[in-house]
Length: 297
Image 1 (cartoon, rainbow, N blue to C red):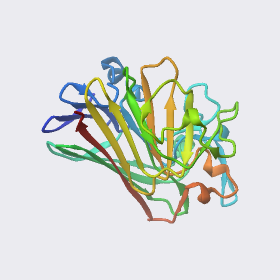
Image 2 (image 1 turned 90 degrees about the horizontal axis):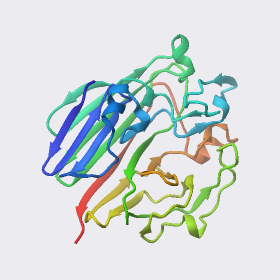
Image 3 (image 1 turned 120 degrees about the vertical axis):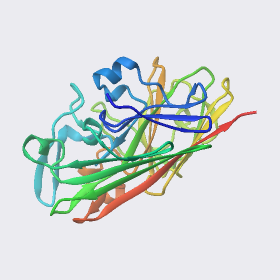
Image 4 (image 1 turned 180 degrees about the vertical axis):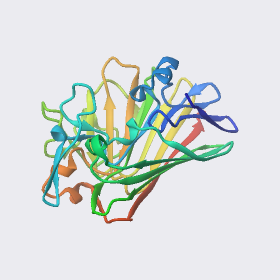
């Protein structure tokens, strides 16, 4: 098991390249800013228990693992246990390579070729990178996705960071609308954000039963750990116009996920209106997310 550790001033970042290119931990001194990955999960390669992993080449669900693109039907592997949909792309389930690394910077790369069974993960060839840059006051994570196929390909980006649900934790973000989910876990038509799901004003996280995609997100969010007197700010490039917020009841974590498109956008009649991109051969998507760290008085 390979762990790459970056340090800068009071910040420390652990990366697990071979476990889906995941973050295994992010700390300010001894305070965990993302949920900590259990040692057993690292030994067993359980990426779903890590601190953060990339969502490439799409975010969230594709209904029943099926979609049609340019008059060709595609079927993907159902890659999330007994869940009936394909989820989060395939980059989080593949080992990444360390391209460069020093004390405060690391670049990871992944090349996907849809040969044989690999086509069930994603039927188009692509190349991806993650660049982690640790400064004294935060982490910049840059994602890159390049279409390495001879055909156009639908594409999206996202991150799935998990945060510890400590007593008194507070959350703030602003979005225009939200997609309620049907019983099949797929989004219905978007609606104005209900009061119990609104975090436009900083408030305690609570237990809102959230696992939903918000649209019209302004690219910023803030998490405050009041007892620990530390705050984490999230600032995402405009490509990330959607935010998935997951607050499971009676669990010790929650997720705030910058993503480029709505859940199952690829199966909408107008997927590009919902954030999905179409990349020509050789074309790239790239975008950054900043996780800023500051002390609270």
